[in-house]
Image (cartoon, rainbow, N blue to C red; front, side, top):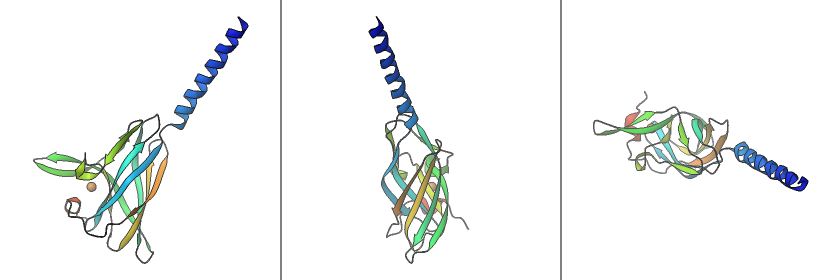
Length: 164
Ligand SMILES: [Cu+2]
């Protein structure tokens, strides 16, 4: 009887610790297939946002700066965007967050998917690459380098946000 009691305690402890590890780790975030589109005074960072963890998380903001071909840092303004159909026209709009479920991927690829992307505003001319820091609701961050495109994008990104 004593042995069974002991085994029960050990099993219960393992289960509690296991659950603790799973939820303690929470979301596990990574960025894949990163590309950048340029407009005239704006750009869009596209990526597949993967969550390999057991808890959902939401992207709530981004810090982005560009590094010019001669090595100078240029800060960019950022917004999180998705796209909606309005009167037969695809339009970008600002969103507060982009959420990713456990063990899934949100394809943030502009017109190719639901339209989510990280919009950047600033002088993109002469940028060699970007340094991107994604900020999540959990307090986690994800940083990566994104190469600037070698050609101007023909996508609609450049038409929607003409900041003077
Ligand atoms: Cu946009």
